[in-house]
Image (spheres, helix red, strand yellow):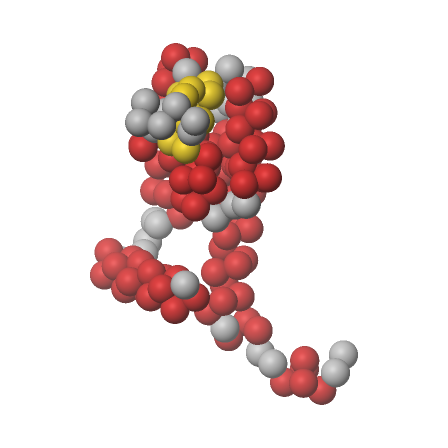
Amino acid sequence: MSRRAKEFDYASKVHHWINRSSFALRSEMQRRLKAAGHGITVEEWALMMVVWADGPVPMSDLAKATLRDRTTVTRVVDRLVAKGLLKRQQAEADRRQVVMEATKAARGIEGDVMGVAQGLIRDTLIGIPKDDIAVTLRTLKALNDNIA
């Protein structure tokens, strides 16, 4: 290990904890989705969450909302279409554009899947004062603004 690496205290950097928390949250969400009997991945859930909230949604909007490239979004959408949770439709405003829309089956699991997510959020915020959560949220938004 180089001297510079030894001097860099990664555990004191907020970025390390953001990354670590992201991995832990993703892993726990996947575990909970599986335990609840939902055959969807965290990546699929992220797209479904956008479609449930904003649908029908163009592929480009799904990519922006989930910070994924179009190739990855297309692959995840293909899996969701195969599972019967999404359908491709022509946009009403521009028939050349394809939008993703939740199927009846997707609407049927929406409440339960979102309940899993809300449970994770609730469980991970136990013991953290509301004021601290508000400061953290403002800080993370500012950090993201600085990146953009």
